[in-house]
Image 1 (tube, rainbow, N blue to C red):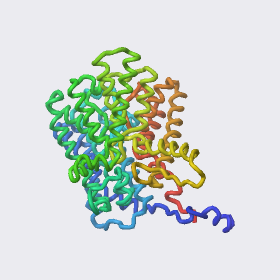
Image 2: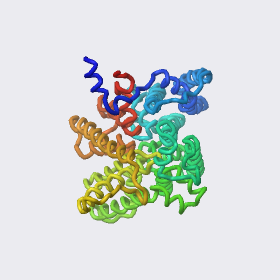
Image 3: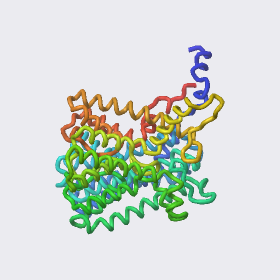
Image 4: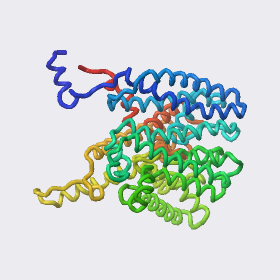
Length: 489
């Protein structure tokens, strides 16, 4: 190709684009091996204590290897000039590697390789969809493996995603435009990550302690607490939450709500007070949407099925589980079209930015709705008038607007592709759409389409859907783009 043609291809912004350097990404991954060792090591030790030989061997073997790599990584200094695309690739690879590390462990539970990969991906992405046929017969350490993977996945999303992908100023905006006070708004991302981890850990400890007397035995409550805090949805029982008491069900859903808001909100509330924290972020919007959706569900339920206090209570909990993308089920998902459509909308919305939830996030959807309102307003304004999109009293960040719009497009496109594939496999359209959205939003609720009997090809698509949705689409897709790794100069 002539030099002039090449220069045309690389004109404009593309001319200054950089690629990910493989050695830098490899070194960044090497630095994360201690974290990965904890991911498989903790349930490995639990399996060893429980005398589950095969399960402990499948988990502790990679743990030893990862610890060895961790010692090797200490001889390398941390890279200080990591490019953003390299951080993106590192984050995506952490999730992919985490999935692969757990596959042998699930295979010891009599799962096929593809089913084991599905279960591992559902765990690390905090989705909660399952293809296991006899999970209730699993040892306690196997349930801990699933719950621990979801808890760790929630940590990665709440912390590592912010620390790796954004500088301190943008990280603060992503966590809800919340300041910790004074100059802390421009504090390092690591400082904000520590605040998020502290809040996440405190909520987890409180959740575990309170759950023990609410659930049967000594271990089911802590497993539910770990998955609820991460809005994951795995349960030791095949019926999810349906067999537990009303108090236990309500508590599990309440835990999901606590982490469906920006986790930095709690640090702000401690330092500046709850009222100040609520005024600074998008927490009221998220909680308001959860409340409004629950009221709409209640009305639809009464109109279509009549009043039944217990059924309404369980249905509202199901709706909140969908809204927080937790995926717990207190009763079978209603097959009535308006109610199922409401659930689908709730799963698309998700929770707050900076939370452990999936979906598009309520703050972004609110921004997109206001964008539409601004377009109609400008039709009525004089040509000389200047108008801007505002979130609260502040002008909306242009990069946030761009990201929200692009995310909506790619979310809808991904949903269409997966939904079409499920429909071509002769699954009913509405349940297929429900399960496609559930996988892409990291929810875990199912209308009966995604399960043990799903075809292998569709299970592979579901694994990709869970990973791409959990990583907000762009991160995983960028990992596979040639332009990420290959320079066209």
